[in-house]
Image 1 (cartoon, chains in turn purple, yellow):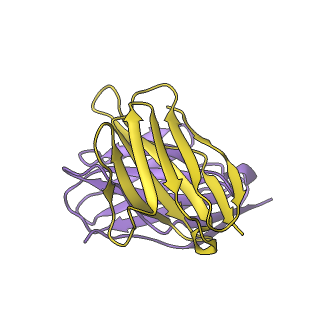
Image 2 (cartoon, helix red, strand yellow):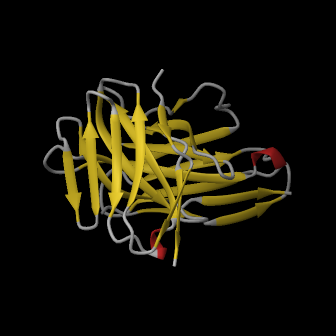
Length: 111
Length: 118
């Protein structure tokens, strides 16, 4: 079945850039998403990318997709302490409505 | 982005009672909603897919008689945990599928419901 893998933890200093990586196995993935979850809260959709795109930028967020390697990354520029959260990568395969989530990457931003 | 609400945000109940959780899409219609369960420090586990006007589709290992799902309108899905037991204590999150403009197909999540069964 589909599998989505993420590194579990990332620590950066305030003002640095953060890069969170994700790999997936389903070659029929059509949409790939990044969600943010703060403690005790639901998931907030940060951004998404179609599988026919290589890059998408939205303010401080840049998503890069390497479809050949099935690798997705989320870059957060000028990381702030408020960016500390768990970030989930998710993919949706063609013809399916359900999402497959990675286990989440905990981002810790220190002052 | 679109807004999805959940109610209640937190509930504590006695073992053996039933608890109903509501999920609403506030500014869009959702023919499909999803119910997830999340354990501490873990990812989301999809429990079921709820389609408006039809029976929910449950994932393997999820008891449909224990977790009753009703999706009676395009903006409301409910999850009822029947005869709750302490092992049902968890964080339950719903999401709603939004087909927006320009081919957008996204899921928006509710804020979650923390269920504690004593």
